Image 1 (spheres, chains in turn blue, purple):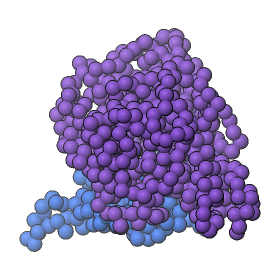
Image 2 (cartoon, helix red, strand yellow; image 1 turned 180 degrees about the horizontal axis):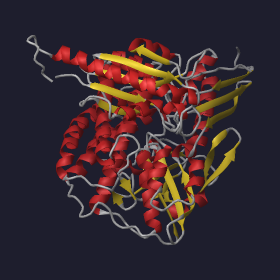
Image 3 (cartoon, chains in turn blue, red; image 1 turned 90 degrees about the horizontal axis):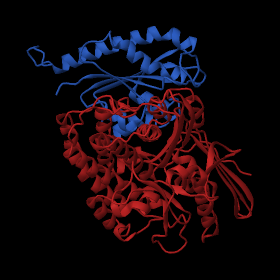
Image 4 (cartoon, helix red, strand yellow; image 1 turned 60 degrees about the horizontal axis):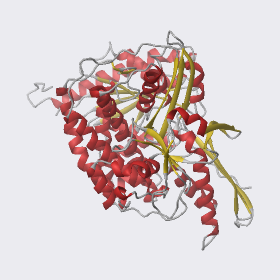
Length: 169
Length: 451
């Protein structure tokens, strides 16, 4: 079975900057190729694991804390690196990305490829709306993620194409 | 440090608990002087900002209180509003509501059993280590959970905070063919759920018991979830067996269940006629166990819970994991029964015109009895909202359980426990009750402070 490109925006839109992940996913709806699976998540590992198959390429959009921090700074993390960060509570989600990825690995359910695009948040208070730093960084983050989605589609096409070059998707 | 000295344990955040809670435990001269569970809980704000809203809004607004049990809030809010307006929703619409509720039960109880609670019985810090050792069991848990998830998505419109529920019924009801894939998933989940009951029944359970009263919905002939009347099973100090059960009509709920503020918690603490009490799986099983689906009843018997048909009661909070697993088996079997008998209603909802009135209702959220009361003006504008969630009700009982378990360990033979052991014991004791503290951002910091 051919893999899909799955984009997951993790976060809570009612906790200020934490809502950046779902916002990016919303912005992508008109910008990504057909067949891209766009979804948001509260980070709960069971549901996260259920949102991809092993042959998929997964792009996670997340907000992180960093110490010392620079709100608005963008990070692109491999799954391994994200897992290491999250075990130090860098993620805003308790059973966070770290545990989700570790659980996926333990169950042999990691997707074919997985990258995390993150922005450093500043304000995780109650309410809607992003801090200026994160709002300013959002267009670039959306651009990065859209590019990552296109590249993932290219890789999947190449991987799925038989030797004579015809596409099977 | 000797257990004869004075010391203070403080857990600033509890792992594998839904949301944020902190624990403060003080031990002086070998006696537990204080056990305080600190909860940050938002429902109080909801009560305030529901006032002035329309009578059709509580299901959508209150479902936001919790990402794990939004359906419980929707169902209770709908029933309370409908009761105020003198409308009864029955037939296929009531069946669909219950099916959605079972979906949430399957998801929530399965999450707790496999990913949150089970690691304790293997001495693992998290589900990740459990998955390495018990991969098949964790995979099975995820499969069962996804069956619940599928019900939520199909009937609720999406997996988190469903949007298809409204006062009077649904916005859209499914055609029978749309439920066929759900039934297929549920049939697979039925075997998985029974296997999970066998799995948890084999765990080692420390001795512990909660002797206080139980509160659960009761509807003779049915393992009550969204029907019946609240009922209290009296405290039981003797051997495990049924004690007298008395009805507590929902209209009288607030006269018996009294909430008060305490300095250490943002949640109100509830007492039932002046005593702490327990709601949730153990209470439901004690009050309604005999009315489980036959397959769940058999599973309960085989799992060593005693025979619910003869009124067996389980008062050991550690064994609540077996009861939750049995409840999942029940929910899966009953969900299948609803789908098999489903005939679409003639309309997706019944009209619920407002009138100046007050209405209250209670249903069984996965973690226990949830109570709502609303008052509205002639045009449906809400003038009062009261919400009593299960975890706030259980807070005093959990503190009592903590005190007793720690005291029992301090009084027991062997080396006096170190802070690390006491911390682990307290965390386990809290997780036994699966408290749900609805809060979205949470951090895993753990601090032990010596006094």
